[in-house]
Image (cartoon, rainbow, N blue to C red):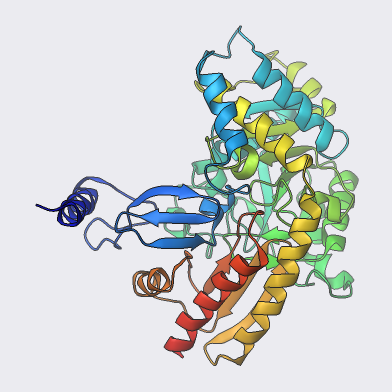
Length: 435
């Protein structure tokens, strides 16, 4: 058996075993979407087992902001693993976690002074919701146990997180009978650059006013609604939400798992509105895509309120909380971001995306295009067939993972203008071929 035949044989074995044993996210085991075996990655490129090189337009679900195989992040991981890769966080601390928490307090909006480290974005949202509930329990107001979220919102796949995703478009409608019932306001309609229309906040204002005695918190994705529709809305909406939460004594949770660490053109999307939430969730890009890690930050008001209650502490503690390896890489990733001209990179990517997206408006199948920061969206008139279009994207040399009617990109921040052009031209050629 020659080397090429051996490679093909090994590849087919891996893919066959993958279909036999592995359950991929949002996939069927009876009618699986074919997977592609990645053997290595560097910069913005993924290499498949057959040698195909793909430009990654997804940043591996929005987290590999520095690209793959970055020497600075590699070194941080290697150095930490030789010291200690994991130790329990109960009763023990270590420099990587302490330094990370200090750093997060310094760079996030003012007033977020305490940091709880978890191990995934959905768990970070669970922690935020639990903080809000325990705060009001500790304040002697246990009836404040409902949440107000936005239509078209998405916050994760665990149970409390599912309960605040859009009950129709948030991918979890089949669980409606088992999820806690919360309140939903209409999705913001004033687009990011449009003139503000006060009517856009009217129904939200009515809901929060009528239900303030039951509401523990509002939870939303600031400025960008991600997996619920890739929608960009006005900063004024966010400012008005902050005002209404203050007016009606309701906490505000900002889910910045997708938007944090520069993706929208601000370090955190809340900065577009100049507001500080009471609780903020971070994840995805926090380690540059190397390790799973999340952080939930809160104000002193929230932390003191929780700890003054019956329990005397926050009742949560993940096994892998504060993992030293993840924290070490997160510190290196954040330093790498802050020590480089990331704002210029994001502006450059946004300009390139907007330029390339103009050509897509010529396609009959395309309903709308939009871009903000390092996010580009092509909204189709009809949902795409993921398995079919994924194969065509791979043949075109690009990795894009659409959902529903949305073909979107969130490229790594290191993507060059030529790589952005190559990515978008590959997408265009595939969509043009389906027109």
